[in-house]
Amino acid sequence: MAVKEIIMFGSPKLKRVSKRIEKIDEEVVSLVKDLKDSLYSTTGIGLAAPQIGVLKRAIIIDLREGEKPIILINPAIVAKVGKEESIEGCLSYPGYEGKVIRPKKVTVKGVDINGKKVEYTAEGLLAKAFCHEIDHLDGILYTDRAKKVYRLEE
Figure 1 (spheres, rainbow, N blue to C red):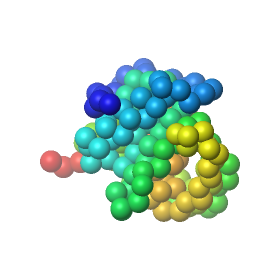
Figure 2: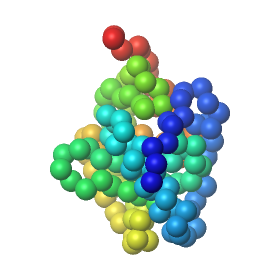
Figure 3: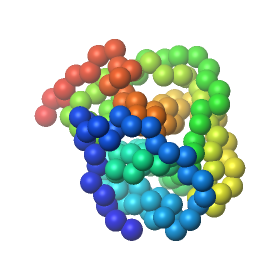
Figure 4: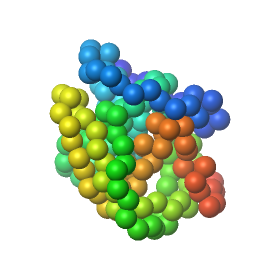
């Protein structure tokens, strides 16, 4: 529908908990389209509704490996295995990265845009993306979890 401005680090909107989506209606379908358009206007791999100013529990992840994007409504991490440290960045905090400890493997449940229950078990970058985007829904930024955040060289 439209490319929305991404809310930047420091905005109190990013620190608020998003509301559960009770039904998938035209408003939610429009939100998902805005998330897609906004994500694809960047080089990022994931975006959560609060990052475009909407405090609802919806995320999109696209690792851009030829697969369809993952769109989840009301996502929840239901299982975590192991831990690993890796580097993360965020579209809401451009020009910075940080070292974050995340689970090695996660299982995530939610519903798709058609209201169908879905479940994903993921490792590596996809697991990290699920954790990162779901954190956004809970008002948590990667900088809250980072051991160290540093500015990227231009």
